[in-house]
Amino acid sequence: MDLSTTYMGLKLKNPLVVSSSPITAKIETIWECADRGAGAVVLKSLFEEQIVAEIKARLSKEEMFFWYPEAMDHVSTISRGQGVKNYLRLIEKAKQHTNIPIIASINCITPNEWTYIARELENSGADGLELNIGKLASDDQDPGAKTERYIEIIEAVKTEVKLPIAVKIGPYFSNLTYTVNKLCHSGINAVVLFNRFYRPDIDINKLTLIESSALSAPEELLQSLRWIALLSNKVECDLAASTGIHDYDGVVKQLLAGANATYLCTTLLKNGIDYLQTILIGLERWMAQHNFETISEFKGLISKRHNLTPEFVRVQYMKKSTEEVALY
Image (cartoon, rainbow, N blue to C red; front, side, top):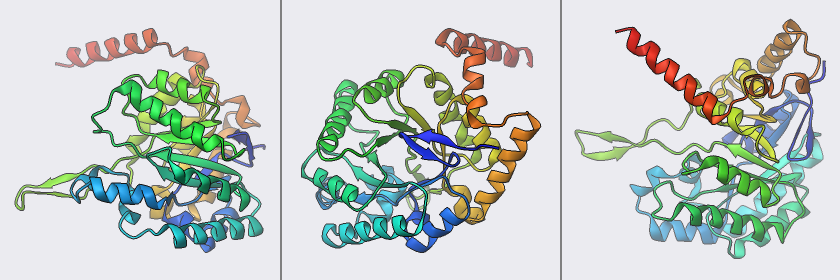
């Protein structure tokens, strides 16, 4: 049985990608991921010093609750000199002792001087680069200008490296189909759907913002599942599904929708890195039950079979609404 797939132009032995997380911040756990069967690893994001300084200057502690979980982990302590040096060493060690793609990750918000770091990542042996572009969902910015800023960052990085590039984005765009197409046409190799913002809660006794869980729930899979299905036949770059994928069922669903790769994080934090084997066994068993020998035989099958046009989606919404009314 062949579980291989292509993502970012890279050959993966299977579609299970360990996403940027505490798991991928240490060489020991990266080795463990490779040993337990991961198809690829995205390293914990590197935050460039200029970006961190800008965040510190502009955002109060409460406003930071709306940032990405990994930004919250590092924004107050990261140092470019030591951070980059250690990061480059991490890439080198990972490449020396694993045989899977090692994808570097940069969390960025501007196309400024930090882009030279991408070249250093490439020189250290990274197989690909994921840009985790951290524009705040609440930014008071014209939607078109927001997309153009993404393009500016991509173009700045592409002048520095020949690495395949993926861009990880959130779901908060006024026209997501247009945005993803625009990003793909900029020359990147993949788009990751979706990044996950912190969801702040409110303590009604202390009258202050408090943290909610940074971990995803299985039901959060549905948002990326919908958009993978809608976009997989409409864009020219690879798509990876992220957030809410907790078991082999989630992996299979995303592949049926058209994903090239599936990102895993919370489920490994909860169940351990060994759980990669459980997911792989479940995927192989499902494929055998349905007489599939390769991933390519069923990748995007649901999207193609149901022709998920906006009109089709609209009709399904109307049918569901009518059924709900009938219940009462």
